[in-house]
Image (cartoon, rainbow over all chains, first blue to last red; front, side, top):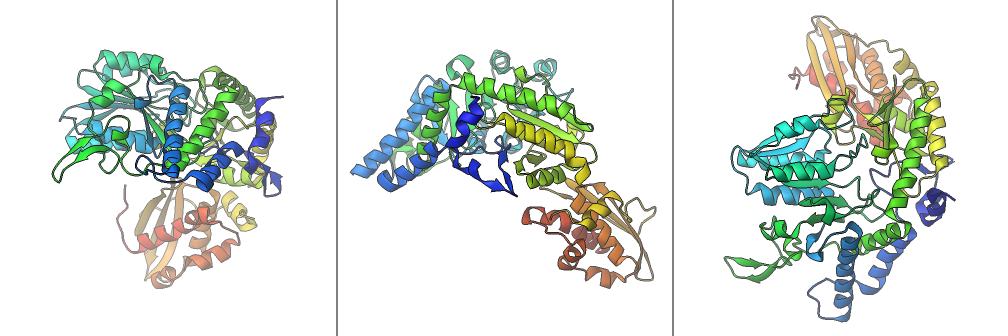
Length: 405
Length: 123
């Protein structure tokens, strides 16, 4: 049995009937659904063990702290980080990038440069624009001239001794392009720049090894990888984190406080001010265990088959344009497309009438949309619970779209 | 049904779509949710909307809403045109517009009002 059909019963929400049809949820890149194991872990935590962490000297406080810190260890192992000090919990990818942009941003000088790309999600663009604006630094962008791949020659021209940070998405949330991140890290480090990789669309779908990758920062969200909302991870290379001032202040992130100064806490708590997202961390732990049991290499293979199937079906539909790489071997679990004469929002609303959920619009990547020359696209995205039947239904429904308006 | 017969018909064959040369009032705006863009141009004569056209890159609901709106207001005084509200527009569209798409239906109304108020086109 394929992975999708095997996993589907683990996801209660997929039993829903939407507009008279079984739900075909093809919007996992926006947010994935949650297996029963995640939902039950959160419920169990709230029913049995909830208290604040790191400070409550009582049984529940100790249990909550243990569960929270166990989640950190599970994430460390899942992404192949060398130490637990390198795993910082955030509220999501966006917060992780903002944290780095503010912490590193304080060290920017006028004329310094931050290199991003034309295929970034707004969340890996705006925080850098803000950081640079505040410090007189400049954002430069690597173009995507063919609408598919980064121009690596332009990358080499743009990255110089002025470059302080290179911030690039690992996998494009629209094109699915898997960027050459190892090469990007190598070239950026050769120029003396720090590297932040946006892994929001990579972690749920690919095996990862932070130690081997060598990026200085790697950020992702729990809710796109079968976990709950309001939890994310900022991986930071220990040596880099140790040299970085905290972005935000509050409880938890200090060792000793006076009225006019404070001594920062050790890693990773130095970057986790305030009461952390404890229950979401517990849920993320369950999600990581679920994915770990499936095996990320198998997850990647399953999704490549679905992408290949979707590309085959959509290519046969007259009027359909597909964006991004057409080779599933170098594509994440997303297929963005448009239908001639049909606005993406109308397309999505009509697909919804058949119980098929897809993303429509600019997918928070307006500069990329401008490059593609569209206001937005339709986007189908896949996860472990996506079945070949879901993809077949998409193909058939897209074929009938032009007749419906 | 989101796509009523009015919406489908006006999307396929809009009656008030196109450009207007030397208009007296123009406004254009974008729906930040989806990037829809609509531009409405009007020609005024004796305090009335003598002519009006819409152009843009937008969804069926937005196109139909603009078309139905301009049909309703052409020939009216500026004051009467400004008094047309969203409820009336929705009724004319005859569709069950969900909250997520309400901005698509409302955008042409906002754009028309801004045009008649003489606001500068934001670029």
